Amino acid sequence: MRETRPLSKGVVWALLALAALVVAIALVLGARAAAGEEEPFGGTDAAVTEQIEEDGHEPWFEPIIAPAGGEIESGLFALQAGLGGIVLGYAFGVLRERRLRGDGDVDGAGDMDRDG
Image (cartoon, rainbow, N blue to C red; front, side, top):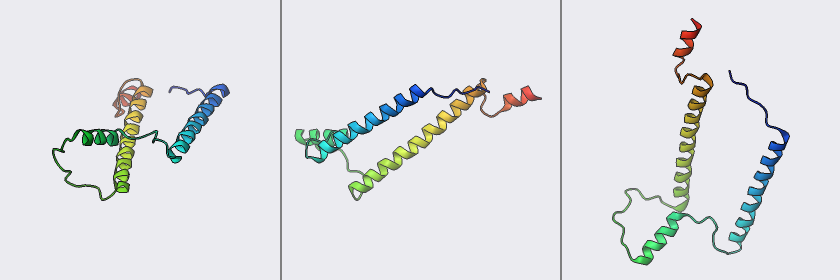
């Protein structure tokens, strides 16, 4: 089995400083948005919808099921992101196990051959 090495203290402090910097930048940008300035993290959907409406284009179709409100739409988006995270985590876990075994065998048949 492959051994893992702990991170050095310098790397840990550098990662913590980087995380603090990201949080500080997010807070500054969030404060600017709350002060009435343009939203720094505006979505591309809203930007494209606005551009399409300005150009006078008509939608090709209406959604079959329209979310009742923005909160439900955001909740569905968060649910989609969560499910995608679970799938990606599972896939990375499977790939990691394959790499740790070193033979690309996921179901353990290769281990049984070596053991007995």
